[in-house]
Image 1 (cartoon, rainbow, N blue to C red):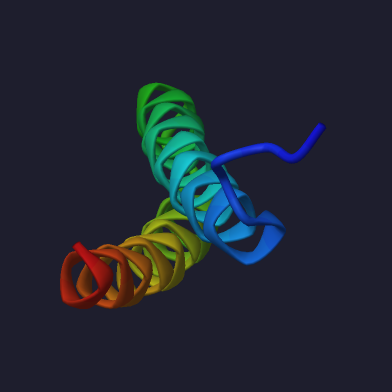
Image 2: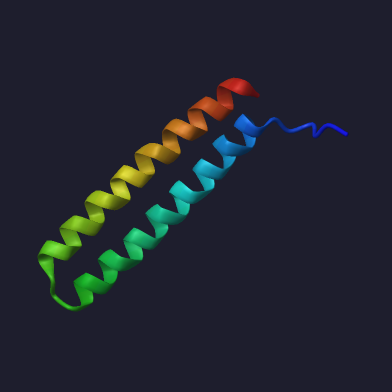
Length: 67
């Protein structure tokens, strides 16, 4: 029996999901660093969140093109 969802499509959706989770979690870490007055960690976690957001946007774009 064959699944209607191809593995590459699942992989794209999974990557999008995990990138969004990473962005959200990194923003929480940034807030934690902010509440502790740690500027260098705030900047680091903001940078990481940005990378996750870029990955999520690229995944969304690819998925949109396939719909």
